[in-house]
Image 1 (cartoon, one colour):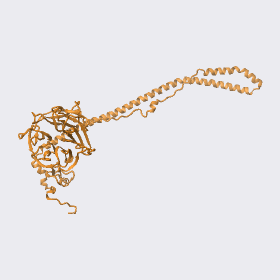
Image 2 (image 1 turned 60 degrees about the vertical axis):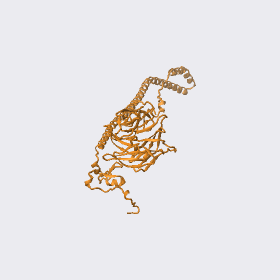
Image 3 (image 1 turned 45 degrees about the vertical axis):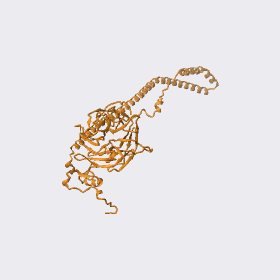
Image 4 (image 1 turned 90 degrees about the horizontal axis):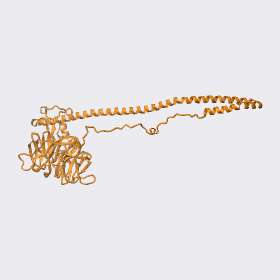
Length: 520
């Protein structure tokens, strides 16, 4: 012991991390964190496995069980089937993305080749134009040779005149006065003849010169063109919400033999491919329904009415009990059963799983959204905005996106949807027009947000883009209230008093070109 050693009471001691004997292990998979150790334990709280060192390090206060002991009593066939289906779906999606990526590579290469070809063609046009000008210049220079010959003849005649005049001048300058007089008189006509000859040679003679003047417009341009790089959204990116429509599938019965009151479904979550769980507020029960067989296969009764529910792990489910001011955790071995509960400060309604096994919940009467650990510790609270104003008045439903980075909350009193960033705390709010009552909310795998309007005059289900900038009507009047969405299916409840024991429908969501009817 050291002076920093902490003593714990017996009930606070961590679960044992002693390594069981090899006969109990039944598994040979080595731990990725501790390669010399075998994976032995399973943590229900975090839906995680590890060796005894992992358990001692990260899960010392969790309920950890030996995997071989769990598998004696629990079947994993359904979970394995769902896991394999997820793998197949991811594989198919990866194949589609790969195909699209190969097509995009080809498009890039084609665009590059086309751009280079266009540049070569442009250069060829410019070169051809300059060659034509050069040819014209050469032809013109050839024609000017005749003019040069005439000039050569002029030069020759001038040389002749120059020689004769110089000769006569010299002779006169050397003569005496009498001879000088005689020579001037004898050659006076010769001077006239020379002047006439020179005038004849130069009169009417034009000299044509050639020059090349570059286009000043081209000189002022620093380049002959521009290389434009256009960014296109890859087909593998998220689609526009306006390209999605919903088609009706099969109504799902939520009635059980134990019902004493009308069914009132306020929460729905997907347990597995063929199973959903619903919170029946009217009968104070959580019902588990086989959607293939269309029947309730089990149910749990609560002292107060449940409201929202969410899957935390494949074997753990959380249910809000507003009037008990607590969140009930359910776990599954052979069947679903109550495990432990988390006390909260206020009436808790909407609930969803977020990162690291934590949960996000909406509360009243002090309207807020809180991020909680499974032991009830509050990690973050969204209550007021940056200006100190309340964000919510009545936040009853919320949903977390597939990346677990943002929470979307609907407020039925303020008629708005708020987007809360779990990382930065940034708040984006979309206020709808008057005359609607925004209620149930969900987020698709593509990040699009679905919100229902419970006002009887409308009863629409709206779809928003993830940044809340665009919207369209997904389902029209009488299609009901949206409660959940998983992969490509969404379910809506009904307010039809003659059909209170059925979910209004399960809708298949498919991508399709669709022009929106009306914006919210």
